[in-house]
Length: 361
Image (cartoon, rainbow, N blue to C red; front, side):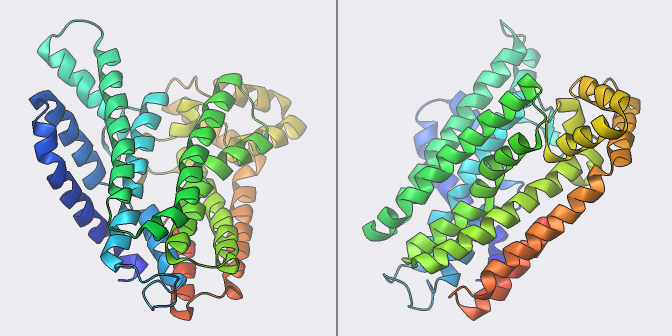
């Protein structure tokens, strides 16, 4: 199976996992089943499956399906193990939506908003918003626990699981650390580009591409040359992927992003795009810089969004972002050129990288 054909197969594997857990969930309570139903809908009905696709590509590129790896693993077991990454993604997104106070995700109400509405519709006691957030936190916790369950119950050999253990641990720790840096920058108003770059490194690049590739390579027992090339590629492509997301967060079409126009401006996100705009405006338009800084996270309506967009465009930060995305994409692709990976997979992986940075996934 090509990595580009992975998304539908991931959905099938996740559907099987939810089905296998249905009895365990039903034994607890109908209300818990309702929450797991919401988690199932969230996990199965959306998402591009980027992380399993890169982990699968990492295994293939290291010769996992060609008998070139350290141990002959069952391909179905390998595939189930990389599908577990989608549960980590579900946890991250559900919790991120609470942190960002987001009302929509993929054009639908966020999980905490679904249960806030349930509380309100039933006329229950207490604060509906707090209830919705509490339920969504638990739904995310279930997803994180089930990621480990799916990975360790995938059927991989003990040797393969042990090899993948270190990047698996690091990935989970890195994404949580990156999330902390993100919310701290937002709360403190720290707009330094270097801070935003560190957030991109750990919250997105490591978690989205670098570590999934590393996990796939580790399952295959790949040598250091392959792992190093994957990590160089994954870091650059992962950061470029996030920079494209930063662009969409300010200038994206809601019909495409599934979020309100200028969502990053509404949430006060201190991204590389915003940090670059502020740094340049402080040199060319100090009043504009102060206005952008003051209005981040305090946007009243579409007129404010449009005004802040124009300030960012006027700074030239959006053009610099495109240049940086192109530079990182080229450098990331170059890391694959001399890597000792399976030739057929080299071009497939390069195409995945190009699609990721263009958000054409």
